[in-house]
Length: 409
Image (cartoon, rainbow, N blue to C red; front, side, top):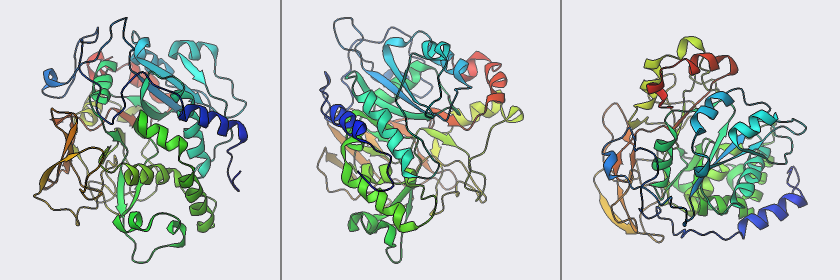
């Protein structure tokens, strides 16, 4: 089908089926309408929690779900922690895993996490195969019409908050969380010439593959094949073993196609180690109640530059996907825009959701001098991170030993 691609005929049939699956929900790029409260307490850590909408969970109405998409090389060493996170909320989530071909996920793990194993193909770091694996996960999850939010995670990620908090946080926002820093070119490299010229001029988005998407955006990622061809051209033009296309293909697609429906950040906390290109791995000494609370309580996005490993401070910082193309955006303007059409420039920062979910308010308030862009959900100040990486198997005892009030589950 495509030279250098692992997509096969079966995948194409699956993606077509997913792209045409109807949904019982109204997907007009707005948050779901508030209705009856969920049958669990509101324990949101951001203020004011009372103003966040709750959602219908009556037996006679469909229950919207979050789909967790595990991109894994093999076992899930942190499964006991995820089991604790999911416990009691089976109606409100789905879970899917794309393991290495031939790897058998243990029955106990499948049952405890309610996992659906997705038929898989080999995945290699820094190649288009990662994007294709995410598409397989999305396609299977889209077949369940009740899945309205889609979160890509790995076997080395952990939830930072209780399930009710994560559920309310994501379902109260009409935006997908897919960001990256802007990269500007003096001359257009051959690798990006297949992409729209206006996109490249406005700033090439380079971010993380740990995206969180609303259903219409997940559908677009699965069904848009012109961009898949662009990604293949990007990798071939680089003429090197790795092209890290997973860090820019989906991000640029969403930013280009839905500029006012994508938050300029992710919800995955990653601590980069200077300019090594690899995230910090949390080990026993790093995992304390104080360190986890510090990540959970971050309310400002780090200002990131044009380098993948740059962050809040010299030598590396916490990067979650804030766009850094701020020079072309006014620091004092604010205007209401209607969805889906708007003339607000791509890359406008600080998108807030007003009380009327049919409109968005695009604000470009200045960064605080040393912190960054404030994180918001539905117009309210909110923690930036719902999940964190990277944790290994030997981190599990320290994570399970944390007081219950630290993670909330």
